[in-house]
Length: 124
Image 1 (cartoon, rainbow, N blue to C red):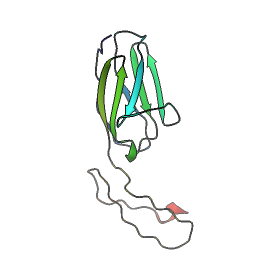
Image 2 (image 1 turned 90 degrees about the vertical axis):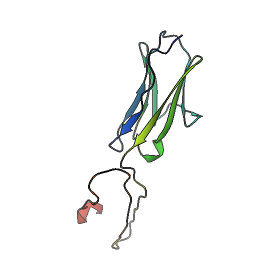
Image 3 (image 1 turned 60 degrees about the vertical axis):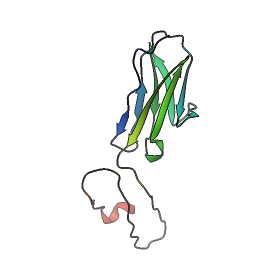
Image 4 (image 1 turned 30 degrees about the horizontal axis):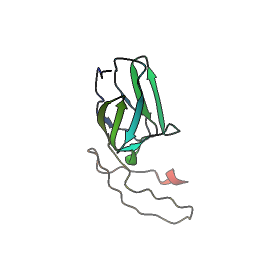
């Protein structure tokens, strides 16, 4: 069995989107497993795994900061690795059900406008 292509690094520019890793193999009867930062991935609401013809894939749904890292596919005795990078990560999230004026600061990890105005009624 041979890997006909390698995984490619992915940069996610929009939070809560779907990201996909995919490569091409020489046979469709291979044993495939996926790892995230060295830990096995189990299929569920966050991860969808499958194979289209000779292309095993992994879809990561609702991508956010904690999904950033190293994704590895093991196909029989072959391995390929790629990075998922998330731009515009939310560093902190604040929620409140009490009606006070809340002031908070956050740090965005991407390039672009340094400030963004939020409408006053956005939290009601």
